Image: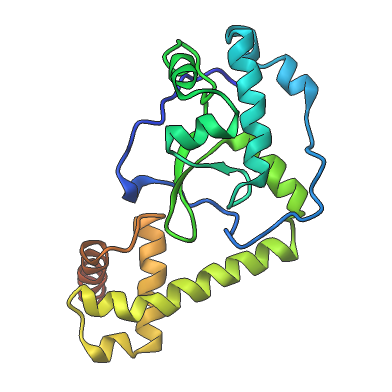
Length: 209
């Protein structure tokens, strides 16, 4: 773990990464968490954080295994304090230190629209436990694609597009790909979809010449 001091201060929702594990997935038989002790022992976080912070940080890693989606934490400080079984005033004291238990936890947006916290290493552990390789990853990608395409017609209408555009399957697929290529993981709010539609039309006119 490379030491980069981070905060969980709010950033624009449109800039949040999408969490790759679906909220509906469960680990009913998950009683063992993979722990790379060498990675932990050699991490800057362990070297620089005090013992109390380190202990609470490990509790957070464990608590995230039973959250939904797996591997995430809530953003509410009261729920976080409860997750590691410390009084709220103690939790606040820990998070006023130079290096806090929430080191390297970042905000993300989940498939159910919730804003939660995730940690890259904890995400790796959760993905490993879920066996998210090969066919499973492909299935998740296909599910996300179906969800995007299913929502896009209504988003086109809200963005000022015509009914004909919202019912044109070829146009929907092109617009979906344009949004992915040029707007990444931004939430598809009306202003974002409208800008994508306008830019895609302009690009087509320029190409036609």
